[in-house]
Image (tube, rainbow, N blue to C red; front, side, top):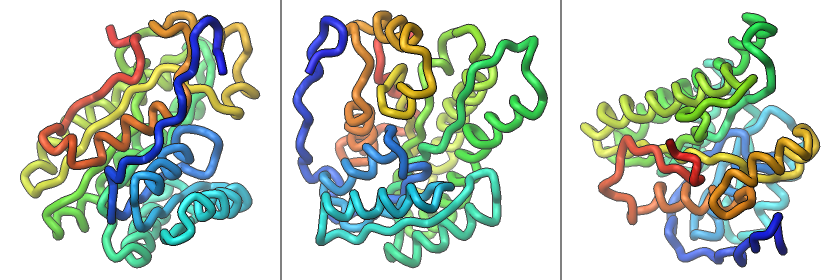
Length: 265
Protein backbone atom coordinates (compact mmCIF):
# COMPACT_ATOMS: atom_id res chain seq x y z
CA UNK A 1 0.00 0.00 0.00
CA UNK A 2 1.29 3.47 -0.80
CA UNK A 3 0.60 6.87 0.70
CA UNK A 4 1.80 9.63 -1.60
CA UNK A 5 5.11 8.46 -3.08
CA UNK A 6 6.14 6.42 -0.05
CA UNK A 7 5.39 2.81 0.75
CA UNK A 8 3.85 1.87 4.09
CA UNK A 9 5.94 -0.90 5.66
CA UNK A 10 4.57 -4.31 6.47
CA UNK A 11 2.79 -4.65 9.81
CA UNK A 12 5.24 -5.72 12.52
CA UNK A 13 4.25 -8.84 14.48
CA UNK A 14 4.59 -8.99 18.24
CA UNK A 15 7.81 -9.99 19.98
CA UNK A 16 6.49 -10.66 23.51
CA UNK A 17 7.69 -7.29 24.80
CA UNK A 18 4.84 -7.20 27.32
CA UNK A 19 4.69 -10.89 28.14
CA UNK A 20 2.61 -11.49 31.26
CA UNK A 21 1.83 -7.79 31.77
CA UNK A 22 -1.47 -6.07 32.50
CA UNK A 23 -2.20 -2.88 30.57
CA UNK A 24 -4.77 -0.11 31.08
CA UNK A 25 -5.48 2.27 28.20
CA UNK A 26 -7.73 5.34 28.05
CA UNK A 27 -9.78 6.32 24.99
CA UNK A 28 -8.92 3.03 23.33
CA UNK A 29 -12.19 2.01 21.69
CA UNK A 30 -11.96 4.09 18.52
CA UNK A 31 -10.02 3.68 15.30
CA UNK A 32 -6.94 5.59 16.39
CA UNK A 33 -3.74 5.18 18.36
CA UNK A 34 -5.47 3.96 21.53
CA UNK A 35 -7.08 0.92 19.92
CA UNK A 36 -3.89 0.20 17.97
CA UNK A 37 -1.94 0.25 21.25
CA UNK A 38 -4.45 -2.06 22.92
CA UNK A 39 -4.18 -4.51 20.02
CA UNK A 40 -0.39 -4.27 20.06
CA UNK A 41 -0.33 -4.91 23.81
CA UNK A 42 -2.10 -8.22 23.25
CA UNK A 43 0.17 -9.10 20.33
CA UNK A 44 3.14 -8.34 22.57
CA UNK A 45 1.97 -10.91 25.11
CA UNK A 46 -0.06 -8.91 27.62
CA UNK A 47 -2.30 -11.28 29.56
CA UNK A 48 -4.81 -8.62 30.60
CA UNK A 49 -5.86 -5.49 28.73
CA UNK A 50 -8.41 -3.07 30.16
CA UNK A 51 -9.63 -0.30 27.89
CA UNK A 52 -11.79 2.71 28.69
CA UNK A 53 -13.90 4.99 26.56
CA UNK A 54 -16.89 7.29 26.86
CA UNK A 55 -18.97 5.51 24.19
CA UNK A 56 -20.69 2.34 25.40
CA UNK A 57 -21.41 0.85 21.98
CA UNK A 58 -17.95 1.53 20.65
CA UNK A 59 -16.43 0.07 23.82
CA UNK A 60 -18.35 -3.19 23.39
CA UNK A 61 -17.26 -3.48 19.75
CA UNK A 62 -13.63 -2.83 20.67
CA UNK A 63 -13.67 -5.47 23.41
CA UNK A 64 -15.02 -8.04 20.94
CA UNK A 65 -12.39 -7.15 18.34
CA UNK A 66 -9.56 -7.27 20.86
CA UNK A 67 -10.68 -10.57 22.32
CA UNK A 68 -10.47 -12.06 18.82
CA UNK A 69 -6.81 -11.00 18.66
CA UNK A 70 -5.93 -12.94 21.81
CA UNK A 71 -8.70 -15.38 22.79
CA UNK A 72 -6.79 -16.61 25.85
CA UNK A 73 -6.10 -13.13 27.24
CA UNK A 74 -8.37 -11.22 29.57
CA UNK A 75 -9.94 -8.21 27.84
CA UNK A 76 -12.25 -5.85 29.67
CA UNK A 77 -13.74 -2.42 29.18
CA UNK A 78 -14.84 0.30 31.57
CA UNK A 79 -16.91 3.34 30.67
CA UNK A 80 -15.02 6.35 31.96
CA UNK A 81 -14.60 10.05 31.31
CA UNK A 82 -11.16 11.38 32.28
CA UNK A 83 -12.64 14.81 33.04
CA UNK A 84 -14.49 13.28 36.02
CA UNK A 85 -12.27 12.57 39.04
CA UNK A 86 -14.70 10.06 40.55
CA UNK A 87 -14.87 8.20 37.22
CA UNK A 88 -11.08 8.12 37.05
CA UNK A 89 -10.85 6.68 40.56
CA UNK A 90 -13.47 4.06 39.71
CA UNK A 91 -11.67 3.17 36.47
CA UNK A 92 -8.35 2.58 38.20
CA UNK A 93 -9.99 0.61 41.03
CA UNK A 94 -11.87 -1.60 38.56
CA UNK A 95 -8.79 -2.13 36.39
CA UNK A 96 -6.79 -3.08 39.47
CA UNK A 97 -9.51 -5.53 40.52
CA UNK A 98 -9.80 -7.13 37.09
CA UNK A 99 -6.07 -7.45 36.48
CA UNK A 100 -4.78 -8.05 39.98
CA UNK A 101 -2.49 -5.06 39.44
CA UNK A 102 -1.90 -2.87 36.40
CA UNK A 103 1.70 -2.89 35.13
CA UNK A 104 1.34 -0.36 32.31
CA UNK A 105 -0.89 2.69 31.91
CA UNK A 106 -1.18 4.25 28.46
CA UNK A 107 -2.75 7.71 28.61
CA UNK A 108 -4.27 8.19 25.19
CA UNK A 109 -7.31 10.36 25.91
CA UNK A 110 -7.15 13.70 24.15
CA UNK A 111 -9.36 16.25 22.44
CA UNK A 112 -8.41 18.44 19.51
CA UNK A 113 -10.11 20.92 17.26
CA UNK A 114 -9.41 23.82 14.95
CA UNK A 115 -10.01 27.37 16.10
CA UNK A 116 -8.22 30.71 15.83
CA UNK A 117 -7.32 32.32 19.12
CA UNK A 118 -9.50 35.33 18.32
CA UNK A 119 -12.51 33.03 18.02
CA UNK A 120 -11.58 30.82 20.96
CA UNK A 121 -14.10 30.74 23.79
CA UNK A 122 -13.13 29.98 27.36
CA UNK A 123 -15.32 26.90 27.14
CA UNK A 124 -13.55 25.54 24.05
CA UNK A 125 -10.12 26.19 25.58
CA UNK A 126 -11.05 24.61 28.91
CA UNK A 127 -12.60 21.54 27.32
CA UNK A 128 -9.45 20.70 25.36
CA UNK A 129 -7.27 21.31 28.42
CA UNK A 130 -9.51 19.26 30.70
CA UNK A 131 -9.46 16.16 28.50
CA UNK A 132 -5.97 16.34 27.05
CA UNK A 133 -3.84 17.68 29.90
CA UNK A 134 -5.81 17.51 33.13
CA UNK A 135 -7.25 14.12 32.19
CA UNK A 136 -3.73 12.78 31.73
CA UNK A 137 -2.78 14.23 35.10
CA UNK A 138 -5.81 12.66 36.80
CA UNK A 139 -5.05 9.22 35.39
CA UNK A 140 -1.36 9.47 36.23
CA UNK A 141 -2.08 10.61 39.77
CA UNK A 142 -4.62 7.84 40.34
CA UNK A 143 -2.37 5.10 38.94
CA UNK A 144 0.78 6.19 40.76
CA UNK A 145 -0.70 5.19 44.12
CA UNK A 146 -0.98 1.45 43.41
CA UNK A 147 2.25 1.48 41.41
CA UNK A 148 4.10 3.08 44.32
CA UNK A 149 2.83 0.37 46.66
CA UNK A 150 4.18 -2.31 44.31
CA UNK A 151 7.42 -0.46 43.65
CA UNK A 152 7.12 -0.82 39.89
CA UNK A 153 5.10 0.25 36.88
CA UNK A 154 5.24 2.14 33.60
CA UNK A 155 3.18 5.05 32.29
CA UNK A 156 3.24 6.08 28.64
CA UNK A 157 1.59 9.36 27.65
CA UNK A 158 0.46 10.43 24.20
CA UNK A 159 1.78 13.93 23.50
CA UNK A 160 2.25 15.55 20.07
CA UNK A 161 4.89 17.34 18.05
CA UNK A 162 2.58 20.35 18.41
CA UNK A 163 3.93 20.59 21.93
CA UNK A 164 7.15 21.72 20.26
CA UNK A 165 6.19 23.43 17.01
CA UNK A 166 3.64 26.03 16.00
CA UNK A 167 0.57 25.59 13.83
CA UNK A 168 -2.23 28.02 13.14
CA UNK A 169 -5.57 27.47 14.89
CA UNK A 170 -4.04 24.91 17.27
CA UNK A 171 -3.15 27.07 20.28
CA UNK A 172 -5.42 25.14 22.68
CA UNK A 173 -4.33 21.68 21.56
CA UNK A 174 -0.65 22.63 21.28
CA UNK A 175 -0.68 24.20 24.75
CA UNK A 176 -2.32 21.08 26.19
CA UNK A 177 0.20 18.76 24.55
CA UNK A 178 3.12 20.93 25.68
CA UNK A 179 1.64 20.56 29.14
CA UNK A 180 1.58 16.76 28.76
CA UNK A 181 5.28 16.90 27.93
CA UNK A 182 6.05 18.98 31.02
CA UNK A 183 3.85 16.76 33.18
CA UNK A 184 5.70 13.71 31.89
CA UNK A 185 9.12 15.14 32.72
CA UNK A 186 8.22 16.40 36.19
CA UNK A 187 6.14 13.40 37.27
CA UNK A 188 8.90 11.08 36.08
CA UNK A 189 11.35 12.55 38.58
CA UNK A 190 8.91 11.95 41.42
CA UNK A 191 7.94 8.45 40.26
CA UNK A 192 11.55 7.33 39.83
CA UNK A 193 11.91 7.38 43.59
CA UNK A 194 9.60 4.37 43.85
CA UNK A 195 10.56 2.49 40.69
CA UNK A 196 8.00 3.80 38.20
CA UNK A 197 8.93 5.08 34.74
CA UNK A 198 6.96 7.76 32.85
CA UNK A 199 7.63 8.64 29.21
CA UNK A 200 5.67 10.01 26.27
CA UNK A 201 5.44 9.67 22.53
CA UNK A 202 5.01 12.72 20.32
CA UNK A 203 3.39 11.80 17.00
CA UNK A 204 2.70 14.21 14.19
CA UNK A 205 0.01 12.94 11.85
CA UNK A 206 -1.24 9.36 12.25
CA UNK A 207 -4.00 8.44 9.84
CA UNK A 208 -7.19 6.69 10.90
CA UNK A 209 -10.80 6.72 9.75
CA UNK A 210 -12.04 9.35 12.20
CA UNK A 211 -9.25 11.75 11.24
CA UNK A 212 -10.07 11.28 7.56
CA UNK A 213 -13.71 12.11 8.25
CA UNK A 214 -13.05 15.22 10.34
CA UNK A 215 -10.05 16.83 8.63
CA UNK A 216 -9.93 18.41 5.16
CA UNK A 217 -8.06 16.18 2.73
CA UNK A 218 -5.81 19.01 1.53
CA UNK A 219 -4.66 19.67 5.10
CA UNK A 220 -3.92 15.98 5.67
CA UNK A 221 -1.88 15.91 2.47
CA UNK A 222 0.00 19.06 3.45
CA UNK A 223 0.88 17.70 6.91
CA UNK A 224 1.93 14.34 5.49
CA UNK A 225 4.15 16.00 2.87
CA UNK A 226 6.17 17.69 5.62
CA UNK A 227 7.27 14.34 7.02
CA UNK A 228 10.59 12.84 5.98
CA UNK A 229 8.89 9.75 4.56
CA UNK A 230 6.36 11.85 2.68
CA UNK A 231 3.43 10.14 4.37
CA UNK A 232 1.46 10.07 7.58
CA UNK A 233 2.28 7.46 10.19
CA UNK A 234 0.13 4.39 10.54
CA UNK A 235 -1.47 4.27 13.98
CA UNK A 236 0.31 0.98 14.70
CA UNK A 237 3.68 2.64 14.02
CA UNK A 238 2.99 5.02 16.90
CA UNK A 239 1.75 2.10 19.02
CA UNK A 240 5.02 0.26 18.34
CA UNK A 241 6.97 3.05 20.02
CA UNK A 242 4.57 2.95 22.96
CA UNK A 243 5.27 -0.79 23.30
CA UNK A 244 9.01 -0.12 23.39
CA UNK A 245 8.61 2.50 26.11
CA UNK A 246 6.32 0.17 28.08
CA UNK A 247 8.76 -2.70 27.85
CA UNK A 248 11.92 -3.57 29.76
CA UNK A 249 13.97 -2.51 26.74
CA UNK A 250 13.38 1.07 27.93
CA UNK A 251 14.30 0.31 31.56
CA UNK A 252 16.68 3.28 31.85
CA UNK A 253 14.40 5.76 30.11
CA UNK A 254 12.16 8.06 32.12
CA UNK A 255 10.97 11.62 31.62
CA UNK A 256 11.63 11.34 27.89
CA UNK A 257 9.49 12.59 25.02
CA UNK A 258 10.08 10.39 21.98
CA UNK A 259 9.18 11.96 18.66
CA UNK A 260 7.40 9.65 16.22
CA UNK A 261 7.89 12.15 13.42
CA UNK A 262 10.61 14.09 11.65
CA UNK A 263 8.97 17.30 12.89
CA UNK A 264 10.97 17.62 16.10
CA UNK A 265 12.34 21.19 16.08
